[in-house]
Image 1: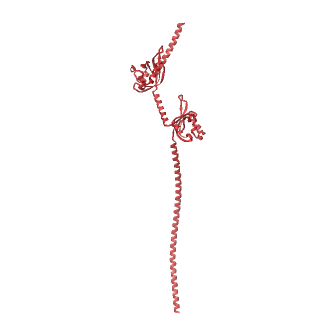
Image 2: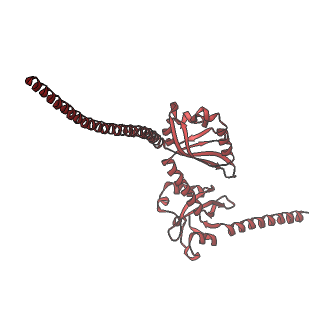
Image 3: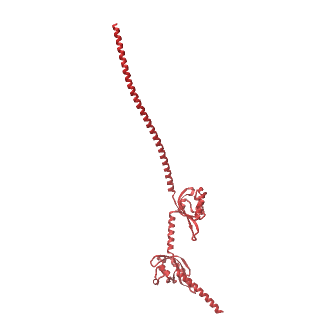
Length: 345
């Protein structure tokens, strides 16, 4: 019975050991693995680690953990505390910047696992790691872009109900609000009552909640009702599970440009009306000139007729004068004859 119990326990331990070996084997196949002594000397590394860090197996002899780190890190209190924790048997994990054999930065998502003996003493540290350099570079690029947008644009975030989660300094400066005045308030505080009560506004938020992207020029109200025009985009944001979690708005203040455009439009309208009025006056002036010219031509014609009439009257006057002179001559002769007859008598 006793031997059977031992045999069963041995069988269980053997199965357990096989399970552990299988687990370790799978980690060896899928991860970069390296082992260190408690003082940081390299004991061994698998092919994945060698490939990730650009080393050959024969190059590891005499190396220590510090050879994979930047000089700035090795000389820091942070690095000394890191190894104090490991020697004390504490597990350490995270994302670590390391240097390859060629001096290039390599980012590792890793765990450092102290291995203890039967007396509880740390005999070695096994590191399991994944190369996340590409992921870290992509995240850094994304953070850089977001930081650039945050510096250059007005940014505000809403939950799916339209309530304000946060806003950056640029947005607060544009709208003249503090974060305390904004947080928890609804997007409608920036809109005219006529818009808020419209079906268009309800549809706007319905479509954002359906994941639609919006961009364009929006008329909004800042503090004390000041009109602010924003060139903006409303961007639905998804969490790690692919669920829509918030709306982020990126905006630029274009109020000055819109006001100038409206002023130019008003000026163009005024110029058009002045031009139209000038054209109308010019047309009226042309009619007046045309009528005046017509009247002047009529006057000229009348003057010509009068001149001809005067000429005709002048000719008749000469004829009358001749007749009168003839009559006067006849009368003079008659008077002379009568005088002579009287003398003779």
